Image (cartoon, rainbow, N blue to C red; front, side):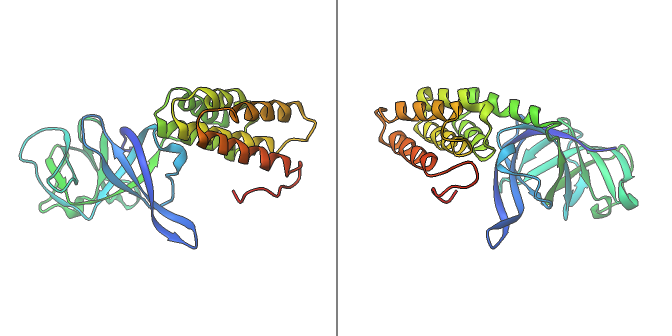
Length: 260
């Protein structure tokens, strides 16, 4: 059985970086009704693309203190040092590779733990509390297809938080997704956030850099960026200028613009 705990990945940041490459990351995870807490990703699963998404995650709590629960309740709380405390009922023991894991029902979902770290022998049905543990993020639900991923980012660009809208615009720019053009144009002209509008301009510039000079797609993008040059916001105008400069200094096979 896989453990699964639904929640939201609200941030991620590097915890091990070598020569600019991120090898591992910490993710900030939020369960409904529980303050945010960090989980560690040993396999570089978390990236900026999933920040802001609802996920059903498999967590493994280890190097922990496991004691009898003061209350027979299924709950996740945080202690005075903002560390998560998992309370619940043991539903399975000796699962997984080598039988070294147990499953704890915490109400909102289930998590994995190491039974050998308990003070006393555990049984199915034991009520325990797990504190002061390291938390590995073993897995989470990803996207089944590129279309599903694209649709998620379209939704985030249209209706997400400012951070999510910026991330979505950046995603479309990094992937030079021409099908996102109209949504990026809308964000460029009408988003309430200057930062999002600038990100949209940059993304449109990157998409334009992949087209031929006489391509209709390129002409449309250049037209919209020229419109943005008349914006009242200096930052948006500057972003549009830079995007246009990069488009005009490139062809289909290479470019001589900014270092992306």
